[in-house]
Length: 231
Ligand code: DC
Image 1: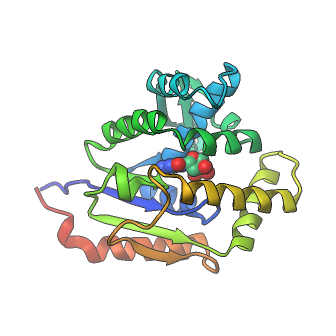
Image 2: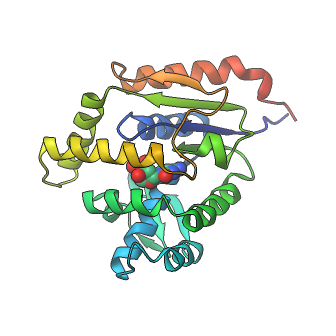
């Protein structure tokens, strides 16, 4: 007897703790953690390195289509992001790349290319996909979907601590301003705007610790046992 492995989606704005939640859930279930935001970031990094103008939508879509973005577990069990075979895990987390990523993510051709790659990764199931449109567009048939939120100040604080920990020097007010701007762009873009998927379980993560969030998610997975089919 073998449990069929399905796709679980977690969407929400940045700084809501959804990456930590998705990573922890994937680890607990023995699933792959599919960080779709990292894919937009990788395309942004490549565009910056190749000096492609952000107004050149065609070249950016081509760039996305011709990029091999993969994930692997590095030493110490840390998830690594590879762009065309090279480790870009740290390079894609800079404030500059955050900004460029949210701009390339508004380009339909870029989204089409990355959604295609994301679906290929999810085809066999056993994936926790995390991003902005994983429940609405990438995996609309996923049997379990979550939408995470948290207060703006808390989100900015998390992002600020994250940047500090990874050696980036930024002012808190700047982080707050950038999060507001990215929210606006993610929610108002015409293609795949950020919104909760139909049937998504909403989790407000303003006051929860990562282990409390994980416990909640696991609870839903267990409750949805009927959709964990036995082959
Ligand atoms: O989650 P993140 O901050 O790493 O995402 C980087 C950018 O990519 C962010 O501006 C939103 C965008 N994104 C998106 O449009 N769709 C996704 N599925 C994931 C991320």
